[in-house]
Image (cartoon, rainbow, N blue to C red):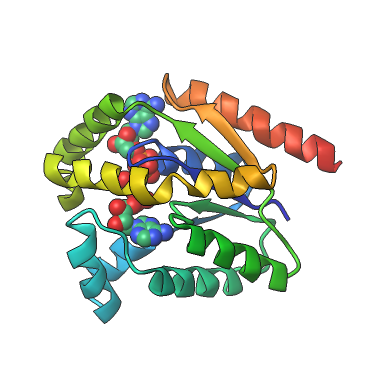
Length: 194
Ligand code: B4P
């Protein structure tokens, strides 16, 4: 199986690039942000709990997110592999993901980390606010999301680096240019695997 984590700060382009990756490499998309927004739209108990946190720019508790991911993996076990978008966001989530995959006889092949400066992140998310009206895309919440990323999430990259699975990619330029850089990483991996 080819299992990829796409990583980066809020607005780095994880969702944007994931769409292109799943089309080209026929992977299953697993975005915890999308699942949580689906729960919020359906006003489920989980969605209502998540809404309060997401609209403040805080993370949803690990046990909730890990449970969602486990379900999604088990309901799609016939796929060639997964692209994990926005997950893991804590070191506990990263360890849990390794355990879940190991129990199923597979593992994360690589973490692709999109590197984008803070000023550009804010510009993109404010533009998305105009286009899509997401409640967590206002300036105060964006600043908190970036703070949470710097304080909690960014160290997840070290977790993957320790096991030689971290690949940084420049996340600025056109969507196509960035996708070319990502494709080069994945193609190299597939060639090595033969
Ligand atoms: P996510 O849905 O993961 O949202 P994100 O980080 O804002 O988005 P992403 O990086 O995917 O940006 P995108 O491609 O859309 O999370 C939302 C919230 O859910 C979190 O804050 C948290 O509360 C909660 N959550 C999710 N997962 C969790 C977890 N594992 N644990 C706990 N809580 C969790 O790009 C952004 C914008 O930039 C778009 O408008 C796009 O068009 C634009 N863009 C993309 N590439 C561009 C480029 N090259 N140039 C210019 N603009 C570009």
